[in-house]
Image 1 (cartoon, rainbow, N blue to C red):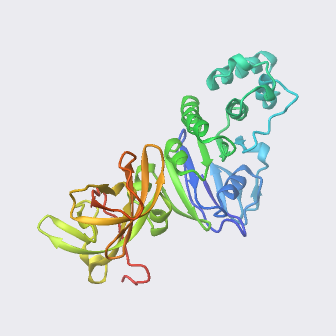
Image 2: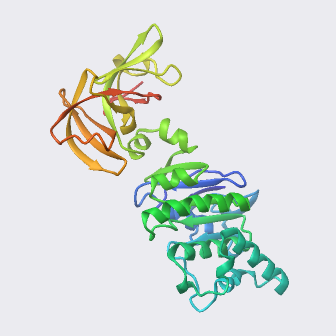
Length: 351
């Protein structure tokens, strides 16, 4: 769908969406997420590259082609909703439908109101609605003209956490019910995984991985993705050959994953860095490996512990909140890793 470049913002990007699919872009501030949306929408011109939908070229820098935003049939939902305060909810939704006859326009407004669950609020003004309802009006207005693609730029950023979680589930259901192809930008990883069929992790204008949410989390393509997603650390390891296949020796024990573990020959001497996420480390008082609690963050259902082994390596662990240990206390831990992910030791060169 899109491949482009914006000087000073996005150096290179290549991604595609199947019709009806929801894609999500995440990444640190300044990586180019919003710039990608602006290029696709036609708000920015490409310096190089090409954008097309269903075979129609919307922009091609080499050809000098650039369709204006209103010609692209692309909808966009912004962070600030941008609703017209003097218009009712129904009139806000129908603003882009003036080309339709009055009966057709009214029918489409009603259809979209029903889709987003706001039929009861059709005659209200935007200021009479909650923040979540206003966001649904903005979504309904963008969906009303039946866009070929819907772009959403952090639409929930101004809402509280609980409402964000609820609306992200609603948004996915609405987009799926309408069969809308969408590209969503967020900085919230949980939101990205809840909404997206496919998730892209960006870094300095580069699309590091464009994959199913499960694979982005469990099978990160690059060291940056592994470090950026979730709560994780890298710990030293050495890959050896065992009777059951390759095994990785780590400070918290031997790890095996016959399907994904690299061979010892993948790294000089088999030495590597192993990705260990907080959910890979289990608190077990009977475990022979002990770690000291350096920091703890209460998260309601669990604590996020930062731990230090006697050998100096640091780990992180999610521990149920009824295991309320003190900072400085030593606890037993063990590794329970379903997907062994290894990378070359930082600073080493792998042939």
